[in-house]
Length: 465
Image (tube, rainbow, N blue to C red):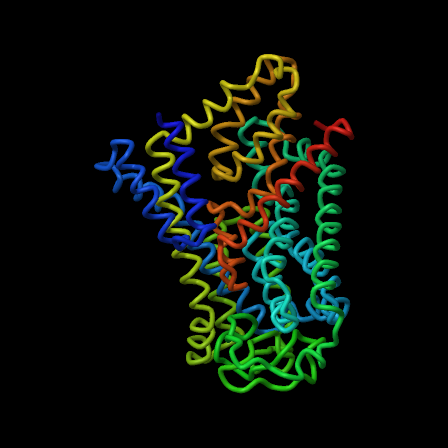
C-alpha cells in the first residue's frame, strides 16, 4: 500500500504542477500533507515536516548566502570578461545563443555548485533570450542538462556519495567514466545545436539593433546583474550590449550593463582571489559550505560596499531571489519529510529492487544505470546513494558484478536529477529565468532522460559499465 501511495503522491504532484493547477510551493506542501493523512499518519505530520526542514536547513542557508555572494560578484563585474566572450560569440544568432548557453553552463559547472552555475548562466544569457523573444525553457533546459553531466565531478556530490556509500575511491569511479561523460556533454551540445536551429528557423538571424528598434512596453524588470530598480536600465549583455538605447523606467529589463554603478574594477583581483579561495575551501571541505558562503557574502559586501546604505541596497536587490529559493527549499522539506518519514520511499525502492528479474543479475550495472534515471529524479541524492545503491551493489556482487561498475552506473541519472523538484538549485534556475517550474519540467524531462541514456550507452560501448 505504501508503495502505491508513494508513486501516486509523486505522480499527483508532477501532474498538478505541469498542468499549472497548483504552484510548486503549494503542491510541495499540500500534496504530501494529504497523502500523509491517507497513510494514516496524519498525527505525525508535524514530526515529519520538522525532520525534513532540519535536514534541508543547511542547504537553504547555503543557497541564501550563495545567491547574495554570487549576486554581489555579478554586480561588481567579476564575471563580465567571461560573459563578454560568450556574448561576442553568440551575437544575435539564436543558434549560437543556445549553444553558448550550454558551453557557459558547462564551464561554470566546474566549481561543482549548481546554484552558482545557474545564477551566472541566467544573468549572462537572459537579456539575449528576452530581447530576441527566444524560448526561455530552452535556456533553462540546456543549462540544467549541461550542469547535470558536469555534476558528476568528484567534488560535485554524486561521485563522492557513491564512493562513501560503497567505500571506494572517488577517482576510481570518476576517471574511467570520463569518456562516457564526455559523450554525454557532446550530446548536450549537439542537442543545443538542434534546439538553436529550431529557434533560428522560428525567429531568423537578427542584429541586436534590429531587435531593439521597437521596444515592447510590457516587458518586465528582471532581477539579474545589478538587481531590480538599482542603477541604469540597459539592454543586452556586457560587451555585446554596449551602445544600446536605455530603456525607460520600469520598462525593458536589467542586464549586465557595462556602465552599471555597482562595478568595482579596482577590486577585480581581490574578488577573483576571494572567489578562488572560497571555491577551493569548498572543494577541500575546510569548513561546511553554508559557513563558507556566509563568511564570503559578509566579506564581499563589506569590502565592495563599505557604506551601509550600499550594502542594504545590494541585499534588497537580491532579496526576491533569496526568498523564492529558500521558500521553495523549505516547501520541498515537507515533501521529502513525508516521503521518508512514512516509509513510502523505502517501500518504493524495495519494490523496484525486488522486481528485478533473476536473469538480469549478471547485468546489474546496466540495471543500476537504468534505475538511477527515475530514482535520482524522485529521490534526493542522499536517499539514492546511501539507501538504494548499497542494496544494488550487494545484488550485483552476488552475480559477480563489481561495486565499481555499480558505482559508475549510479551516475547515469544525474542529467535528469538536476531538474528534479527535490533539487533546490533548480528553483534558482527557474526563478531567475522567470519560467514556470511546470513548463521547465514538461520541456526538459524527455531530453534529460535521453542524455542519461546516451551516457549509459557510451559507458556500455566503452566497456566502462
